Amino acid sequence: MLRHHGGAALARWRTAWRMSWQELLPCLDTEAELGARQALFFLQGQRKVRRVLLGRQDSSLLPLARSAVHEGYHEAVLGTLDEGDDAGIAARALACIAEVLGCMAQGEGGLRSGPAANREWASAFGCLESGDIAGGVQELAAERQKWMSRPALLVRAARHYEGAEQILVRKAVMSSCQFISVEQVELPPLGQWVQVECPARLDLSGGWSDTPPITYEHGGAVVDVAVLVDGCRPIGARVRRIVQPELRLVTLSGSPQSEVVAELVCRELEHLQDYCQPHAPGALLKAAFICTQVVQFPSQRPLRVQLMESFGGGFEVHTWSKLPHGSGLGTSSILAGAVMASLYRAAGKAASTESLIHAVLHLEQRLTTGGGWQDQVGGLVPGIKIGRSKAQLPLRVEVEQIPVPDDFTRTLNDHLLLVYTGKTRLARNLLQDVVRHWYARLPSIVQNADALVSNAEECARALRQGDLLLLGKCLDCYWQQKKCMAPGCEPLAVGRMMDTLRPYVHGQCLAGAGGGGFLYILTKAPRQKEALHHILANTEGLGNFSIHSIEVDTGGFSVEVVGCDMKNSAHPGGDRAV
Image 1: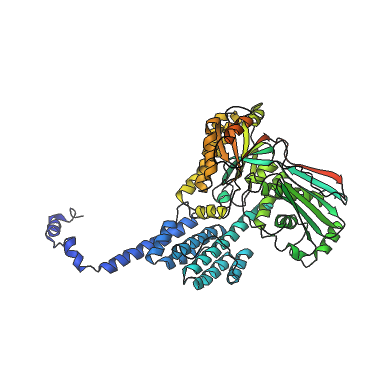
Image 2: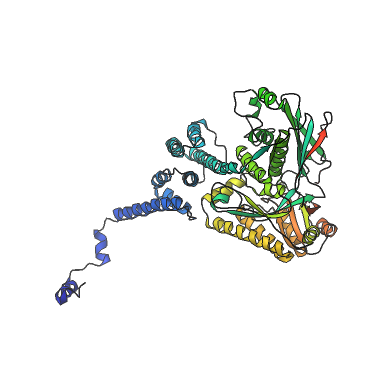
């Protein structure tokens, strides 16, 4: 520019009065300058919040939230997060607000995980349940102002924001209901049992990628195997119609040495109202009656009237599992599938396996246990398969059978073993922590979600090729990924057991979320049950372990009408496997 104006301009520029930074500093209002820069930084931060949420980017907003709280700009950030009115965006925004409130509590005020049932928040929750996202978010913001005065209130407010986020996740998952189709079939005679027995499942890779919201925001892929445990299908249910207009619910539970049969009778609709409380007696069975629409709830028509008009009587349901609590083998979801399959058939309906997979997703959302789709895919679809879901709504699970070489199934049967660790898996708050970390988009979690899906595809390739060595590497990789997703899921005794077994296996992994339950191992040599039992028995500090044989179940679950037995109500399951 100076060149265009000739030498005079250049000369003036060279002779102009100048000040150094040292001379300027005394003239500056340093506090105002820093304040302006800080305000500009957080203005840019607010724009980043909008850009990340609207663009559904995998950038973490947690550092910004912490910085805003530390510098006193949390109100501005909270105000930006309050703008969400789209279900997908709002769920993440609510989770981010919970993080800001948690940061404001500065580690005081109690645990973040806990109840979110204060009636002051009920109106906002009601708006979200009814689909009024913008109204619900604004009501939450108004209520939040009353809970900002001390750490204990901030933590409780954070819990309620996570409760609100869970409502939106639940509604997103419920979009899968459109893939449930039921057809009418002949109603079985009164008193005739409809029985369903299911295998357990082994998750060989990809688990956690099936968990909402990860499964529909990132996309998921899980390799599952349906397995017999000690030669039998360990999970089952049977249903029959009875004369009395009531619901008779019978559940077998307890240890192998002291089995307990719990019976519950529901004669009024009010007896079903705790179906959404997972620890309430018979909650899963109550939810199954509601989700299959055998019973309309809520309704102005009494239960006995509904049952008599539609079915000429009530229902009796028996459920059982030969697996210990917290096994990691998908018992709860598979049992839900067994109950729904038998209940549909006893009520004169039939659902395809694909419909049952999505029906269990629906039931577990109504039950408020959350959870993904891999368990029911593993137990309801026979053999070896990979389930996938795309990063989109409505959530749809698609299952592909994995073809394996001739005799490879027999090879797997010879090389796979289950080791019961003797540790009951404690999954308390585990799912909530994983979802919290996902919504925070912690870089390690985002990278791990990518790795889970890619390892699942690699595992499927190993199975197609019949490559035991590669399969073992996938199992070991999967276990590291599980520990990244849920730190602390490897108890010391389990780690000691895995170290002892390592020289004898191609790969090993705790089933399900980890923390206890069953360890599955892919041995280098075939038929190693007795040899490994001897090795573990001579290892100190392992506790009460046991080793069990498993076989790939290529037949899948069965639905049978087994005849009328009005007197004998005992379950047909026999002795437990563990």
